[in-house]
Image 1: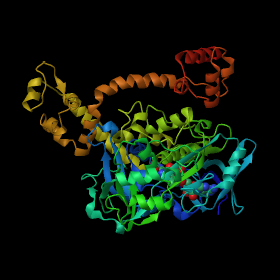
Image 2 (image 1 turned 90 degrees about the vertical axis):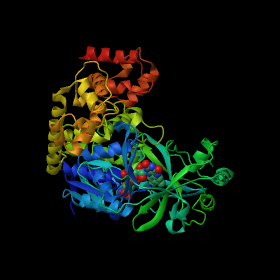
Image 3 (image 1 turned 180 degrees about the horizontal axis):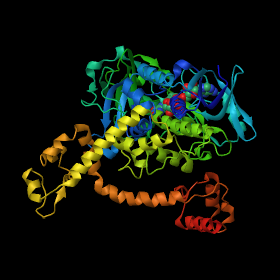
Image 4 (image 1 turned 90 degrees about the horizontal axis):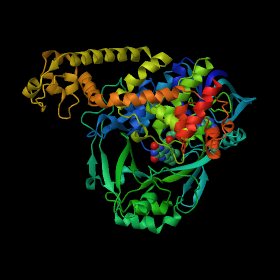
Length: 616
Ligand code: FAD
């Protein structure tokens, strides 16, 4: 076994596997240390990848040649494009995954990376020399030396599982927590907080009366995650739909004091956007029913994940209330729902590469940074993995900007604003969402990935071919112009204003399809369907994008005004003490980042800019 690596990654969850794969693609020798090798790629909660905002992240990971999108495509047993009827900017690909197939796909992707050594073991200590982390120590005494270490221990740091008033230490159901590592992290003086999340009971599918339930099939034309995937490989299935009843709500209300979350047993803050059933019944008291999706956990597994009823009620209450739900009258619970409370590190302690500012050689990624969700974890793993490898190789950092990616939005949100509750991605978090679409993630990020050196030759070639086709088609559609008469003759509703329009401009009309446009010129028949679909999506936003580009340029100008890491806010007498404190804690790296700190004012920004000019 090797004992010296460029990068050591602690944790083989979604952040850890993506981090290790990214570091290896960059040519760094990498050790991936995890408690159980067989658990690489385990989904702790729902067996699904993607969704609104989250699907965008998966596409971006894929554009940079990451592993999550390909694994989700290989394991997907139901694909749905969410918000299909809305504009492409807010559409999010989602797939129900077979847990076993997903784990197998992640494990095969990791084994396919020759530069990664998987090491099974518990990391109990970080080796420190001065203000630098230089490796890790395992519980059996093994020491692994590394130029850079990435910690991705998820919910395991001082994890406590709650079911009613019963509490036990655990990283997730069936796993021990990382207590020794958490104690070691205390020594580093990192700002720690407590968060919580919950999961529903798992049900025995054989005891569900499916004949009573609504059915939710997947899409007829599945949209895959990876830009390199064709069609689903696994058999496709439907999910069931049911809902809570007045009787369900009565039982929950009567037992609220026995819920871990409501009985005062948990101090951590939970995800507002992923509420427990106790939360829903209390916060939306006038709602008579809440929808539940019954999601199969796999093709050869009849365990069912009831999406929508995560809980920390005692087991007897869980048993009673699930049986008040139509179709579940005789259901058996295979594993009770539970809440988990865990330590997280305030991500404002990190820079934009996800490196700890106060300690060299240490990166943090995933749920440990206060996020929730596989996709958020994987995207951070990618950022940390790329940057750890680059730093180990003595190369410049790789930054992701808000203007180019959801990854950039998330890293910026975390490192400048911190988290008040578990952070999850939404399309509304991205101010430039018209250009940051899931469909164009490759055009936004694959060139960057090629420049960084993390994209394989096969993807580079496939992307080059796609880009060529898009450019040829765009040119073709923008060349000739057509009179209103010509357009009216093919049924397009335009004013007789004498204005000639290109076929490309026409595609931004709400009621014009690419098939209409094909009637204008025989040459357009050469444009392949995939290229046509992509062009039609970008053309919808062409007018808005020109306007948005001006905002992007302004923000980029502000991003370019760097604030040195040692900048003294105390030396600005007119700055309020509150802002001085916030700026000193957050240490923004640019004026744009400073502007996003809560409570920041234009006057305060002007003071900082003026001082920066003086110091030039
Ligand atoms: P994890 O996937 O937890 O991986 C951590 C890894 O670190 C594990 O492989 C573990 O073995 C390893 N590890 C830990 N300590 C050590 C150590 N000392 N040495 C070596 N290895 C170590 N997300 C949602 O989006 N929606 C939800 O509703 C939701 N509910 C959840 C409910 C529960 C109960 C849990 C546990 C998680 C839930 N999640 C939910 C979150 C989702 O599972 C996580 O966000 C995601 O898995 C985080 O990925 P990660 O890589 O950061 O951590």
